[in-house]
Length: 146
Image 1 (tube, rainbow, N blue to C red):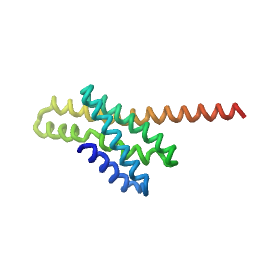
Image 2 (image 1 turned 90 degrees about the vertical axis):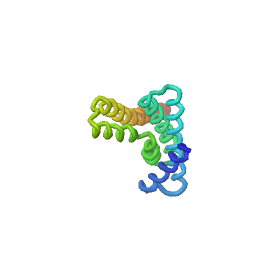
Image 3 (image 1 turned 180 degrees about the vertical axis):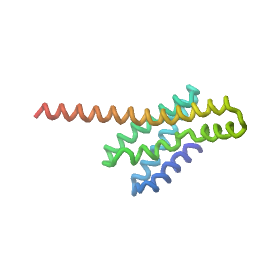
Image 4 (image 1 turned 60 degrees about the horizontal axis):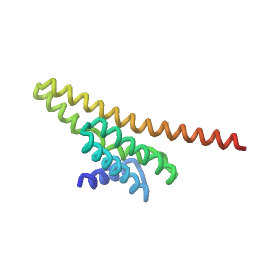
């Protein structure tokens, strides 16, 4: 059921980014893929930040691929796709611990929240950098072949 909500959340957020037509489905599917990969890795590894990193990398791969196939910017698929991965529960729990004056637990949740946010950024950035490098490499090869 969580996968359905990941799809719906990504699909609905795509509406606010003015994604139109059939691309809405692909933007929603981006969130489903990311959350699925996150869930599988979380079940195997048990580390939330690592799971978020792998999920964000999957979203990045899907987004870059869908962008080339559907001739759209990759952000159309990556931004809605990472929303199910955002460590909002950890941030909420951090605030609860702070309100209850449980500072050690709050610091732990703060580190988890910052780590999750950094993992999302790094996962997307890594895939984008690899795709750009490969694109430049193929352009240079095609220019040399002329």
